Length: 104
Image 1 (cartoon, rainbow, N blue to C red):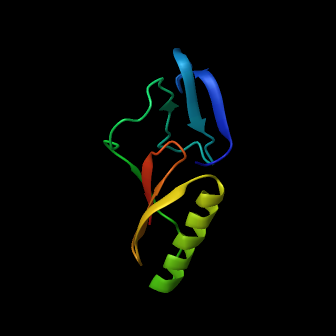
Image 2: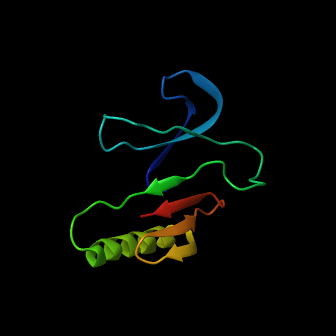
Image 3: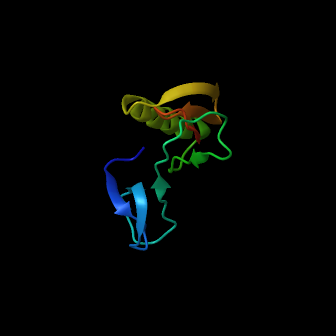
């Protein structure tokens, strides 16, 4: 969900994939890096995997939870929705296409 997204027809290795890809802009050349491929089919079942976005920072549990909720609000402004909340631990969200991820 991080912007800007770069759209191209090439894989990270530079070879043509024949379909559009989305590669998040890396803040550092050190990996891991992700390459997200668009597929023509809509999502029909629960994700086989999802990402956990870990909010960095130090402090008390209350301060860490505040950073988590601040990040959730930022993601909601970008179009994500909250699905469930495990107060003090993580928040389950979905991107606009329904792909689930946790913010912790």
